[in-house]
Amino acid sequence: MTEAIHHSSRKVYWRVWFQLLAITVVEIIVAFLPISDSLMALLFTIMALMKAFLIAGYFMHLKFERIGLIYSLVLPLILIVALAAALIPDGSVALLMRLGLGYY
Amino acid sequence: MTQEVIFEQEKILKSPWGGGKSPFGVSREKFTMWIFILSDAFTFGGLLAGYGALRASLPSWPSRLEIFSAFPFINAKLPLLFVSIMTFILICSSLTMALAVDAGKRMDKKGVIKYLLLTIGGGFLFLLCQAYEWGHLIHEGARLTSNPWGVPLFSASFFVITGFHGSHVLSGVIVLIIMAIRVAKGIYDKRGSYEGVEVAGLYWHFVDLVWVFIFAFFYLL
Image (cartoon, rainbow over all chains, first blue to last red; front, top):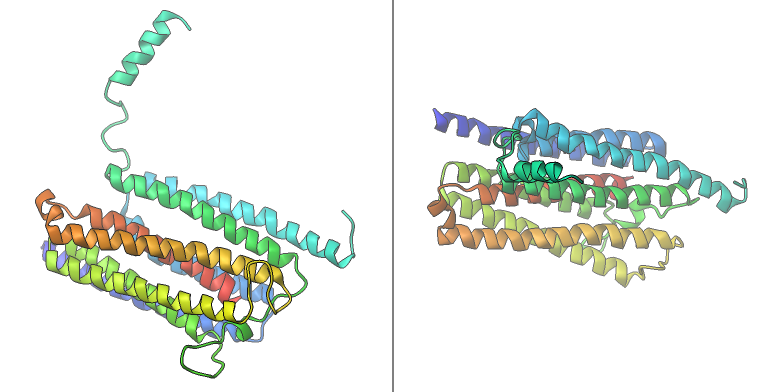
C-alpha cells in the first residue's frame, strides 16, 4: 500500500519536471516573439507564477501541508507585490525626470 | 504592574502552550526552514522590485539577445541558449532533490545518497556555468559601476542579483555535501527519519524557485 503511494509520488515528480521544462520552452519562444515589452512582461509573470506554484506546491510539498501553514507563508508575499507596485511606477516617473519631460 | 499580573504572566510562561500540539502539523526544523525561506523571499523580492524600478527609470536597456549570446568553445552568437541550459540544469537538480527526499521516506539510504550526489553535481555544474558567464561578461568589460553597453545599472543589477543567487547555490551545494556525509554515516537511519534531507531539500527547491523569476525577468525580458 505505502509502496504504491510512493511509486505514484515519484511519477508526480517526473510529471512536474516535464511541465516545468515545457513552460520554460514556451518562455524562451515568447522571448523571441516581436511583441511589446509590457505584453511580454505580463506573459512572463504568468508563466513564472505557474512554475512557482509547481515547485512550491509539489517539490516543496506545500500543497499537502495544513491550510494554516499555507496561508502563513503565502499571504506575506503580498508585500513583495506591494513593493513592486510602489517602486516600478516610481521608476517611470524618474524616467520622465531624466528625459526632462516632467518635474515632480 | 501589579503583583497579580506578574504572577499570572509567570504562570502562562511556565504552562504548556494551550494552542494544541504543533498547530501547523510540521516539525520545528521544517517550520524554521519555511520561515527562513520566507525572509529570503523578501530579500530577492526586494532586489527584483528594485531592478524593476531601475529598468522603468531608464530610456534604454542593453539587448538581451546581444549580451546573453556567448557559448563556451563555440565562436558563434547563440542568443539565450547558454542561460536556457543553466535553467535546465537547475530544474533537473530540483527533480533529483525531490527524488532524494522520496527515497528518504522509503528509508532507502543508497537511493538518498545517489540522488543527493546527482543534485550536488547539478548545483556544481550550474556554478561552473555561472563562473563562465561572469568571466565572459567581465572580459567584455562589464564592471559593477560601468560597462561597454552604456547603461551602468545593467551590469550593477546583473552582478548583484545573479551574485546573490549564485551564493545561495554555493551554500546549497555545501549543505547538500554535509547532508550526504551525514546520510552515509547513517545518522538518519539511527534517528529513524530522513527529515533532515527533506529540510535541506526545501532550501534547494527555493533556490530553484528564485531562479525561475531571475530567468524570466532578467534574462528573457
